[in-house]
Image 1 (cartoon, rainbow, N blue to C red):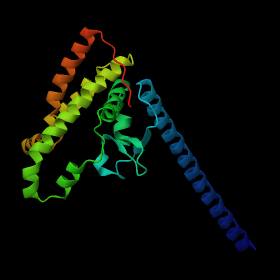
Image 2 (cartoon, helix red, strand yellow):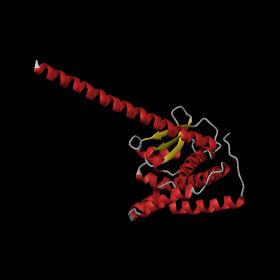
Image 3 (cartoon, one colour):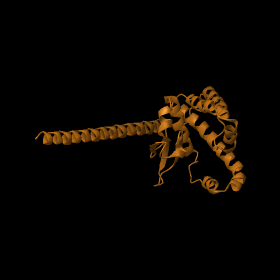
Image 4 (cartoon, rainbow, N blue to C red):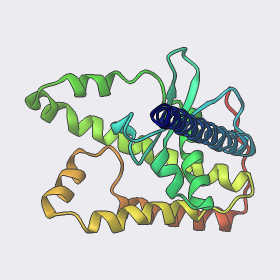
Length: 226
């Protein structure tokens, strides 16, 4: 009899433990889903505040799922051909409010500037061998760095038009300057050759100069996407 009672206690104890584990999993999943929804809604509200016309999808992606997007954001199109802004979870969680405004504005600027069309150049570069890359890279790098510079400038104009502070852009890029200063020389050399973004030190300089110009001009521009 005592043995049967012991078995019963073990059985019901296991059931209760399993139920508690399932409850924790359900609560954690629900909490994460609510958190993700609120983050997406925050970005969508910011997009509207910046004067960009819907529809624009938003995806917050774990770095482990898409290593290419880790610590970054991107504007493009989803599988259905709809506009979509993707931002890595680690980047989203590291941004101050003013930096967040700049990052979202920068991605919106890519849409406004027409930068998000299917990029054949990038595919050719990704599929090419090292010899072909060496031939293609200089021209592609120059065009893409100019594209990123134009998106930076447009982002500042969007922020100004929305009445939001512009200095978050300088603060955001300054962090990259500090991180790059810690790299080995060979890594810094590789970044200067391969990266399609302008060098962070140059980005800080032209962003600061453009902010000063916009503040002095007092001009407020409205932007829309046809």
